[in-house]
Length: 285
Ligand code: PDD
Image (cartoon, rainbow, N blue to C red; front, side, top):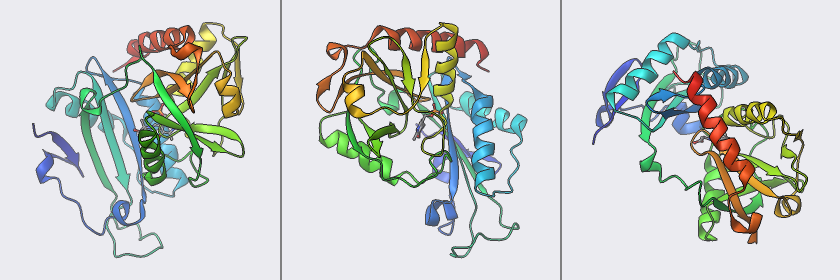
């Protein structure tokens, strides 16, 4: 079925949405994006995503001003027009179309704003009751992973390496420590029950789900340690899991062939997933 998508102020059928071959998103990966989850037809943590979008735009000197109310209306309209009950909305803003040049074009060039929906089924999500298997690969991405830029070739290569190895995803490793997953944040639960995830810095994306899950863990009075961990520590952990808007909280049951929690989703991950979903729905719009 042909979706209704949003392109630069218009709602059009996906076949009719065309952008210039000179778009800097296409030529330079000069663009940022957000992925907002839709559950029961409602947007999860919309403000969190808009905050991060503004931050990414600022870090890259975009002059585009995010009109939050307008963005909310467009998101809601796309959900309705495409009958999305369970899925997500992809939003991308690139610096726009200009003759190819490494320097940014002047401000008369308008950014390209694109939004479209995806149903969760079409993304073939992993089953949280089974969990996922990950491999480790070197983190060879650029040094500003806190910016949600559309430069996603390396994460794509890492995901393909995982797939070729018969796994579902990859943990990226730099200087002997896990930074994050290809498109998610990585957590472990130590044998004594402390929740560990890497601290915020330019090394990782500041996940909206990560922040929400940490809030839930605090409410559950769990011990939290924001610090780097190694693959060896993760392999010896009581549990491991990932967080993202597309997977929520997803248990990791194997790392580089070593089973975690005897290859079963762990109770902390399952509990945090339930609490996260319950809490997120309360503030969903
Ligand atoms: N990815 N780390 C990276 C590198 C990511 O790409 C993502 C999100 C996350 C988790 O962030 P959040 O909880 O805000 O979704 C962490 C999205 C889902 C994607 O690219 O499809």
